Image (cartoon, rainbow, N blue to C red; front, side, top):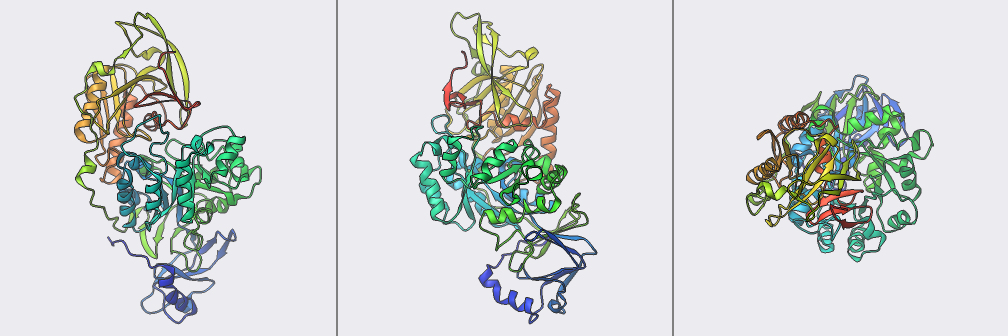
Length: 600
């Protein structure tokens, strides 16, 4: 395989680009005999050809014959469409359980050539140093991976404790790094609405650097609170779930980012703002947010999102704009990428059909990087230091009593708050249930689909365990599942029906440095090793996907029937999305942004 190339900046490349376009010098690559999709004008130009030099488009027009010399590589498109490489506007690499290198290797054959990534998962574990490691590995890749500096670690101050905190000084420093494109999603929307000085300082540092502020408004309130949030500076939002959400965002000058991830299905319900209401599509952008390795290996990445948008009724060319030029324009990069036009990075896909989108050849920075699903380039790895593989610190061996839910003294029955999981959605429900007390404790009730949940502190070795109840997984029999992927604080979440197995699962991840483990009837039946920060593996995506598939099957063996149930498991500590969550400090009522008691 070829090694990653260093792309020259436009000023460095301009003299040769001009010479090639004018015919004074020969191009490195010419593609002819195809149909060029122009996302600036939304038209298909039959027979148009492109000439590439220095990893950028030099000539784009009816005939590139004047750019061909003895050393020019010529690709015959044979009637196929030339479309820009696909851009993911908002995503978290860590959600794929892969490092940036292995994530890139997985998505390049699917036609993704640009990603805008928010590494706030690793920021919660390792702080600014972890962000720098992600940034540096991203810079080694043969495609464009831009990094957004995480804004909220902790995501909700006072409601959770993270491994590290992100400060305005950290944000200001990161804005000087070459690959930083802006500020990651501003999840602390109550802080922005309340004009919290820390949040406004982070936004101010980003805007002073001329970069984009990412948004995250996880509330159905589209009144004055939403207007206040928009006034605070976030330029986009991906938390919309219905047409009204999308319309509200674009009306206030924000980009409506519509996501299709492994567990998020928010395109169909929002794209009607364009397909039925007829709104200007320039303000609409497609993204994934979170995709696990199995989705990447078996279903695709942004090509999957693009196909889905088309299936939902979008004109193929409009949908294509939503994951190419619209994205580039949003981040101030329309002169750099997102279209097949002179001066831009030579990122394109050859496909024989604009609706089914077979990804037949992928070119990035002027080089063939994938052909018919085969990766043709190296994706270099960063040298991750040893301490990054030792981030699960429990402080002690956990035992079954750590996971017992002790009832109020003398109680025979209690009314307990229960986290209700919603299939394919980020929000949870705040449920309540009458529970029997046995030997002073409240236990699971599989007959009513109520399991136990525990959050185990894993950053500072405090040995603390917070216990609660959860419904929606359908678990039966004696089982436990533990994961060190627990958005956003990334402590350890354990769900189970047996305290001894919950302890065994937690201790197993303490021994291995993190990941996911499923136990049934006294034995481990699935394990996914995620040793880097307890979040990622540097193994190939196919291997991680196999382990993850076994994990999903193990969850089903324990009675779980939810689609993408692991994603729901990993979000149970996400204390910025309503209604009820768990943190190291207790149960969190996210409708009020305050701690609440387990027993009513």
